[in-house]
Length: 588
Image 1 (cartoon, rainbow, N blue to C red):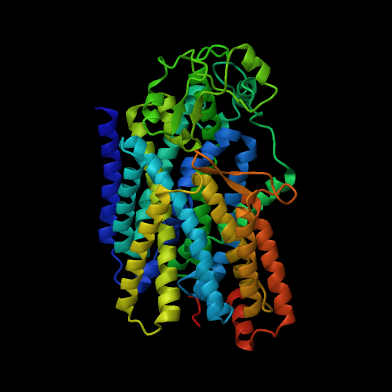
Image 2 (cartoon, rainbow, N blue to C red; image 1 turned 180 degrees about the horizontal axis):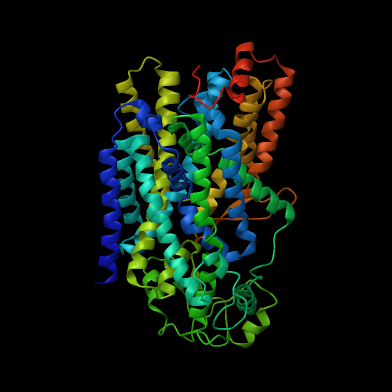
């Protein structure tokens, strides 16, 4: 059976599963649409949270980023995992105890202000829309290669699939679909990693393989990789090349951004009790760790395999000819995500760091006129099984896994956007007397509109998947996270302080990101780049942590300069924090 048919079969089977689940778990009420009727088992909720949280950025881009840069990009691993721990310890149980459906609803009630709720809706929509673009781009990348269509066509197919199960099922349909998607994505991520680890090191466990000996050379795998990349003028794979300040702030931005991401917080509203919110957070961490422990190994091994394919006899002087290039390159060239340009006309593929001044003399001596192969980071994980010549069914499985990762997160985000519009905007502000049926209809219509907008932005994306995602985290970090933290842990923060803090945090971060120097468009590449930082060594993607700090300070100063919150609000804050047994959440 040829690869295309195999891809169709495997991807088709997983889609049939998602559709079946969506029809079985149709949402009949707003409680089911927003919070799955609060009846989800903690272990299942942990799996669904894992799928919701491991997006196309985790599955497709993260190992690609680690592969491209090495140690420096392990900040993605630390930031995302650390943020998850923050969320589980500091926010999830308390928000579940509060017993509402959405994040803006909590902010509106806690800060007794419709304005605060509206500001939270705006912050949520800005962060979620930015994030969903990354997922849609990921869907396009995966579909274009494996169904051999244009990435725009792939995007339309993905949007149609999400439209079907998200609009029909709401949170209830999405939850059970995400459980299935988690199973698909974890199997798809682990199996090729095990094969490749066995090939390169003889060790079946990729995290241990990463620190084992490279079978072919007898050197430790990472030492071999360091030697190979520095031989081509790239920075060492295991060395740190960024400033400590920027590394720290970037990790912090990702951490508090993760903890402020509305689509993940909402998952904790779906369990029966507060105790279940805690245990599902623990389970989710286990399910997430299964992928995150493997990712650094996948990144390193993909980079080594890529270079071995270009320099098959192990010396950088003799690259492979374009005619004799491996099949996987031909397959990916069709998608436009891998490009070859013969700059010196010798028909060979030169691949090296042409920005390195130290390597320039060597390149000139060999008659090289610039690196000739452009590899998009986002293809590293998807191309990995093909590069390593694994069986066809593994390639098809990875296709299904990449799609599961992107679709599960896209669905969660679209639900967060549509509940913000139908529950917080329409029911909360415009039409408080709307019927349950009317609100459910509004939720479905706003979900449909959100999918159309996300598809449009996915076709014209600002920056590649993971960079767009890093910005979404910065925005959530600067606006939503501080408001939630102060709402739960401080009785003194009032409505004026909260609104001033959120607005300042969001605006300062957006301005820093878009100031000409920090984030400019690169002609002809359809992507943005981090240029010279404006402030110390802080890049635009790391600024979310600074934005959050400004938010905290402004909220604190304004609250202390104005009147205290009403007594009943102070009592409410007290009641959220002090456990009354781990029973049912109290409703106010």
